[in-house]
Image (cartoon, rainbow, N blue to C red; front, side, top):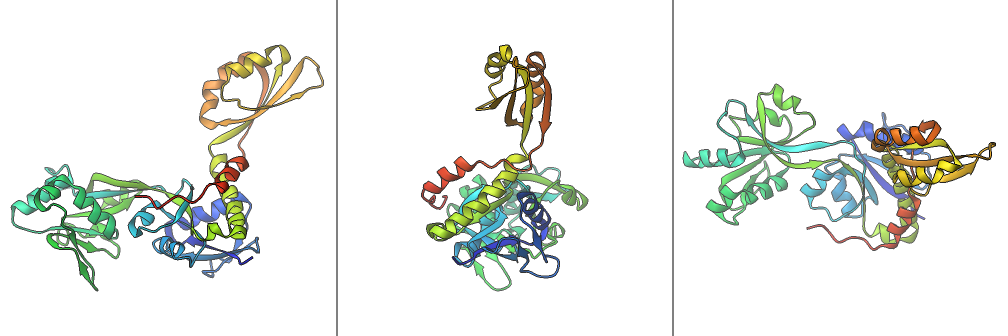
Length: 333
C-alpha cells in the first residue's frame, strides 16, 4: 500500500495538533526543523502546510488526509469528506468596525451610511469568498444591487461586477486597515482581545470554526488507504471523546444494583463484576463528564467506593465500523 499522505497545519493550529497526536499514541519528531516530520507509523507520511492550502490539496488528491479549519474549507469551497470535528482551534469570523462608530450596530448600518454619502463600501479580509457571500446575503445589499457580485480586489486580479462594494485582500494586520483603507473588516478572533487593543468592536459573527479532520474522497474508495484512514480517525476521535467523558468504578450491594442502573440512565451497558463479598458487585462504565455532578447524589445513596478516571481515549470502534460502510457524503451546499 502507498503511504497515506497526511497534511498537518502550520501556525496557530500547530501546537494543539501535535498534542492531539501525542495523546492518541502517535510520536512525531523533527517538526521544529523540517516540514516533513517523522511519525511512528510507517504507513503515514506527514507534511506541514498552511491550513489555508490544505483543503485544496486534499480535494485535488495531492494529500489523502488533512487537518484544517472549517473556515478554510468554506473559503476554498473544497470538495472533501469531513471525518471529525477535532474541537480545538476554536475561532469566530466576525465583522468589526472602529469603536468611534458608536452609532453603527450592524453591517447594514455602515453600508447604508457609506452609500448615502455616494461612496463605495470597502471591506478588508483574508476571506474573499466568504466575505462576498456574506455581503450578498445582507438585506441592504440585496435591496440595492440584487444578485450582483461585490468586486473582489487583489494585487493581481479583480472580479465581480459591483464596484459599490469592494472586498480587498488583506495579507495580515487586518485590524490596522480601518478607517483609512476599509470601512470594516472580516477577520478571525478567539477572545476579541486583539480587536479590542486596536479600538475595534464586533458587529456580527459570520461563522464559528474549529479544526477538523478531512479526507480526499477518492482515497476513501481505495480499500487499503481507507482502512488506514479510519485507523487514524479512530485514534484521533478517541482523544476528542476521551476529553468529554469519565470512567467510573463503583461498588454496590447486589440488592441495590437494579435501582442503581434504573436510576442512572447514563449508565449504558455497564460491566458488572462480582466482588469477594458475595453480597456486593462492582459497576464499571463510561459517562459524560458533565453528568457526574448531577449523578453523584444518587450514586452516594446507593453505592460506595466511587473511583473516577479521566480516560486518555475512548475508542468508539462500532461507530467507526458503521461509518466505513456508508458511502461518502456529497459536497455540502
